[in-house]
Image (cartoon, rainbow, N blue to C red; front, side, top):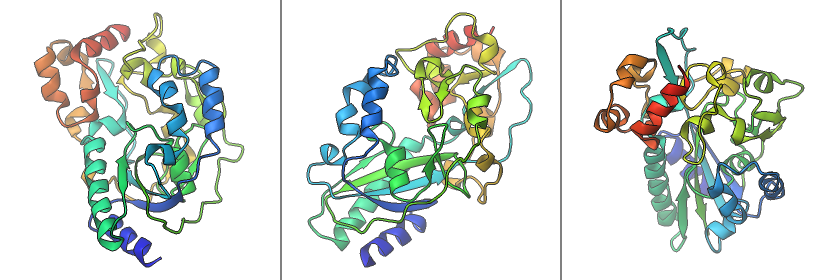
Length: 304
């Protein structure tokens, strides 16, 4: 416990994380649901998920000899968005700030280095959401929250606007207690999705998801979907913001992931004038770099 206490203090203090917990690296029970999800065709637009499904459900396949997974989270929730002018579009709230991949990964590396100082000989491997791990299931196992009907991790005080990171390690660390909280009878996230992407509680079909339509390289906005896009040109927040837990955050957004105000609402006319260099300048240092200007313009055409 002394090692875990030291890691927790370091993560929540010097590294600036909002949540910390430890999970066992044993295979996840959710891997069976992932196999069914892929078999049902839900990964058609996300082939990288199907290709890595075996590893995703087993941290020991991600790092040989793994015994523990240290999980952290940063909160990015904040005040509600103002009404969107008719000549503007939105990007998802997590994308309006510093790229969390680099911010969280660099802190996981430092956390791994501290772990080796405390337990020499320990091996570790950092992961953010680009890595093949069921990170929300691991975070729930580590006591950072619970997986809601939206499939998002939800913390009872910080809500569902969380960005996650994991440090898979060969060190044997005592696991954290899981939270005994859930969605109950609430279905607001399912009802808020204009495309029916949440086909049932805890099941998301990316083929119907606005975020997938506007970001993933194997997907595109289908014809006639303009009214269902809700003004989003990159990603979507509708199911997250509908969650009752999103309405009572106890902390301001993590300052490490401070909002870039010029990305809160974007004028369509200005975006339409951007070439690749202009788009790269606008998107620099944020998750918006995920797409090219060609994809941006395709998304803008779908909103006309």
